[in-house]
Image (tube, rainbow, N blue to C red):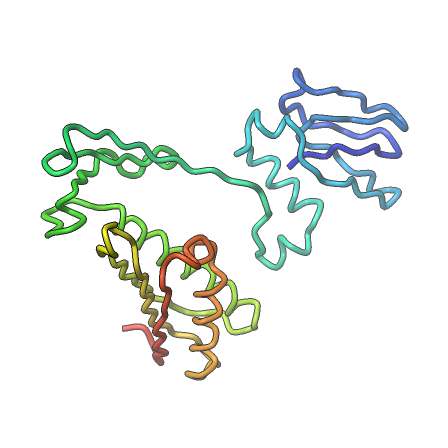
Length: 233
């Protein structure tokens, strides 16, 4: 989060990437390309938030996130996430041809898994202890949906006690081309104060609105089945 605005009095500036930014914090002057600028609370002035090239220096700086919550305490108090662009990476190493070759998949950002085996056979035949792009897509869709549904229920005043979500992604040959054709979401939830109809409506809304669903929409058939339980076993 970057403040790139003219403020109306002297401000304290957090030293984050200042070597590349302009540090002009005197009265009535502009401070640009710096990460964090303390607003003039005495005068009720709040800086305008925007992005500059300095963001690229350390986009995961936690101080920026904390400061954003400082500027907008209403969001922090409501548990709303601070909007920041994020990128995630994964790498694959492949050896050999498609039919008999194989590869490994590694999480680049989190480093939570390394060298997961992957092959063409694991996509079209038995997994045999190997993963596939479709299995990873199912994991992405299920986790994204669960967050979207949890957030929607919370905003409606009925936060969930428990959600169990699974995604089933189908990889099939359509004409002459192999394609991801469907992603079916199944969710079981424990949500105090909610009836079956309301839970079903919330699940369908989450299916439409979650970012992974929106990335797939128009290319992959999406569906959801929702079951409400009284308690988590």
